Length: 115
Image (cartoon, rainbow, N blue to C red; front, side, top):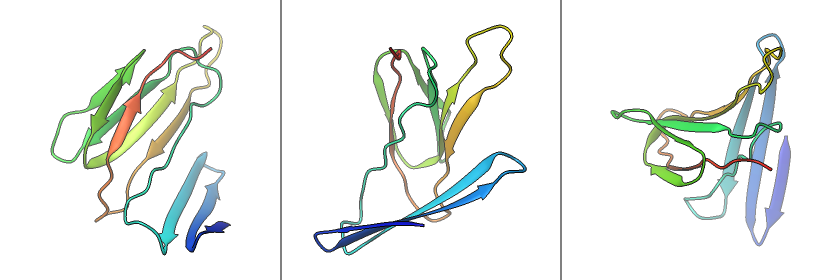
């Protein structure tokens, strides 16, 4: 568990690792602060062109790759995927954000080539 307090606002992140299936659950709570907050998930590894996508509740999947930003409201999930660049590599990395049931989350997907 990670806890940070500043100006009367306490942010707590609880990380649970599941090594058998390479899964990690992260629970974030904010106490004494605004109802809305922003979580940033920078890219993984060193992929040159990661793919970011989201699925809104009752909507069609939306994706951003390359330059530009796409805002998606009330998501079921958002994901960032980095596909291996070499033909011999079979390792792909992904971060998937799935809000708890009953929680509304909006995202801004930004696809950009990495340097």
